[in-house]
Image: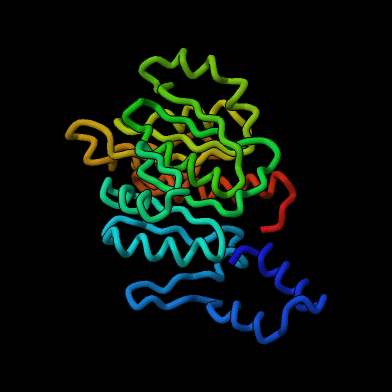
Length: 253
């Protein structure tokens, strides 16, 4: 449940505009709502500052549609790893949903987040890394973080990266996505002061082992200030970067 909705509920009770019994009925689903096939954690915004996310892979379109319907009554909705069938079903049931086919995400934002000052840079080595980078960018935006997208600046043409140096240096945090040998996060982390989060992607030929080569390369980086998340985990990188960005803005976690 959005903290703003709870605050408004309490104000209405305190002002006599709502009976305590009605407020109790609205709060009944805290801390979670049991749908049988899913238990929706409506309490998460109070603990984490952002709602639970629907990981759509493995769920049926009907399940995603129902979860989204229950969640949007309490706040904003983000769905990740969506198939075309899921995106089409959500669009039919929730016309207000915004879909991002590159990121394989959808969002429903009845209460658009207030954007914090500054930005997080989301950097990707090649166009093939864009699905992971866009997943990170969409996630950040639903959490109230402005995003500066810096695409196709991999080490095969490193002069493209150096042109973006002012944007890199101005970020409160950076997410750097790369496949193949995974070298780009090391280069970026060596150039900037802000924390960098490396995201190995599953892009590459056979010896990349589906992103394992990039993962090991990033874990073995000699660049300071670089941390690494799992292969293709743009969502996890965004959650960490959003926490850093909040701290930079002086916002309580």
